[in-house]
Length: 405
Image (cartoon, rainbow, N blue to C red):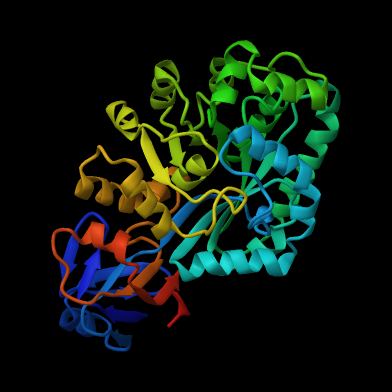
């Protein structure tokens, strides 16, 4: 048992003063230091510097570790140009990111306070790096393939990767499933994968309605995707429309990434199925897809969280940076209200979406905690200041273990 005594605790729903935390792997008690010392006389007491603040570790729900070698290789500004550049440079990018490259990307997330992340794994090459990382990892094995003739081979590869991830037996590692997108996965494959998801109660994610090109292709098999699919796969029509795609997920809560171009009917379907939308503002801007309408999500009661996406469409894996960009991107929303929602989106709300016992400084929750060194007593605009000023993170705890400090 340990007792840590900060000046302030952001739960993140409330700001507590002059309270300490007794913890091992989980948080056992939050109370004044004197009370905790009496309850746990043998506990190690960790006293912090003046104006110290404890908050939950951050949760990055969507990141592609395998593409961490990209810096200036891929083309930005338009989704289709970016996609063609990914295909053209895929071998160089994937082959150029070894375990050291991937581990550096994971370490950079840890340094910025990310104690849990959702890794979207296309090839399984990041399994070792994710398995050996100190963070909690939801490891989403991605299924892709729109050609029925290749379905058996693609599903066999997917199963092999999923089974390999199930062999990882360590605290905080969760094998999971990702369906790439409605335009790239055949319905037969989706149904087979979801049988496993439902039988084993696995966490589930998918990309959805990221670009205007996807919108046109799913609506009536038109737009620039028509030429793309015809050239690469000799395919002239989509394998499903958006309604058919969403129907697959009606009975299993899913994290849907992007949804920038989702329409009213799709948002209603997402709301009724209690799905979560993952918002990646920097990625959306760099690929020319516009801004997610957060007001429309909130009007329908849709849970949304903020994430970085991968270095194939970002310049760093840093949720404080991501939240800062979102703060300026959504300029019509009240500033303080948005800042508070962004903090919730990478802590409490992300944990809820992933069904993990973390994301809050609360008795019974996992002891995933950050110690930030503020320069003065916080005021009512703390959420804004946390996002803008990048305070030093002097200590990091994951499942009660000191990872830094």
